[in-house]
Image (cartoon, rainbow, N blue to C red; front, side):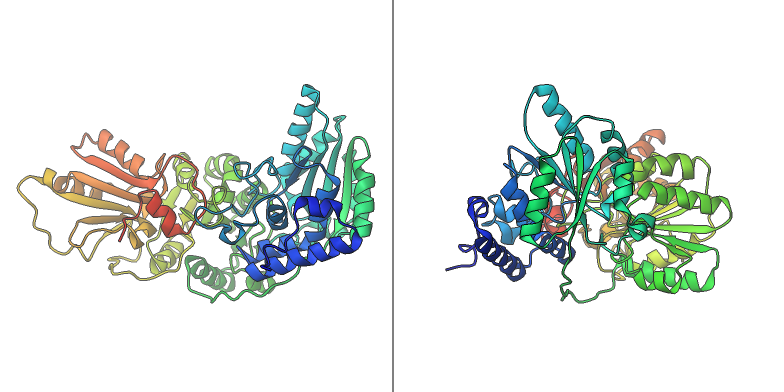
Length: 542
């Protein structure tokens, strides 16, 4: 019998006795370890809540009852039980299931949760809707102690404490987010006082890996009226990652940050809950006062940086593109409006791949371009990233440096100066232009996209590394040579480099036609970056 055939169904879970439930859990655990889909931290998170997942589905009438997994890192067992086992080996692959809960996949996923801290707000909204509609069902959100540091969770707790809604928050306490949970609450650990201060009834803590204890405690909690918290303590297993280390943009930045911490006492590195993913844990241990993890609190991270910059320090924020979206107000009002020298090092910009729609870094460039006074860079390779980082150390205002989740190479382009806003393709060489420049086609490529843009041999190519302000003189020169421009960029087609160039051409009254190859104006699902870029028409088929 195949491992897939041995997996229990939802009805099996609900009808099993104690011994059968344990056997079903072991079958699920073995299958997960054998297939090892997706990211190792996500697999570890799902294994840590294996028993909790089974008990929740035993006691709840899902999908009629509402069950939301915050972040969604914990949802692998949930997916196996709810009709997606046959497709599970294609998890996070093109055409396969998402690595996160997705309402488009299953009625058992009532809400999409790819980002941290959103589940409780959604649960309150759904419970309020049910009351207004006269519907009777139970509402449960599973929120980890890492997500508890998110400001949105605090806001939801505060609001629900004043509402007469029957809600259950299963507080999954494993003392981890991606890294160990940061902040005073995780150290103080007086969670009863914390939740009761928000007028939530507190129950626990209970062992989250003991079926009998867990089922008894959850059953009692679900029967209570009003907002209730069940504090569940779980252990997340530690699995080995066989991935070979490679030199990528992130590691180039980490090396630079290490040098700055050693040589510049004013340099402060901030990374909200992503030290491990950024390769920065060793730096946090070596420089605990100047490497700051403010937990899953992106708004606070940018406000913190603004305060540091206002007093003469040199704050540098390492943040994923998709998480920067959560702190747009602080970028505008706290940093840019006050012209503070904060550097944003934006990791995972552009198409990132398997994490899907919530994690594609499509929108950072459009957001940044809207903000007055900010300088925006997109390096074309590792050497350019180092040059840009070095040259922006003493900027008088805010700087954003965006780069992809990709290995670095020197490519086959020569960077003529230490910090070029642009450079031309060495491959282009001397180009024989026809009598009519309208017949000539040129490429304008945004920074790192030159790696895969598919610029034809001999075609004129301007690689733009500084997006704001634009390299005006070079663009004017190009317009006199070629009047057909193909713009290639790893950002949304809305408000990216292409639209900036369209506005530039109009302002300068240039006779130039522009074609834009960029991330389309829609959300992009999961797959490898190359697959997705080709599907979006950004990268040519070889």
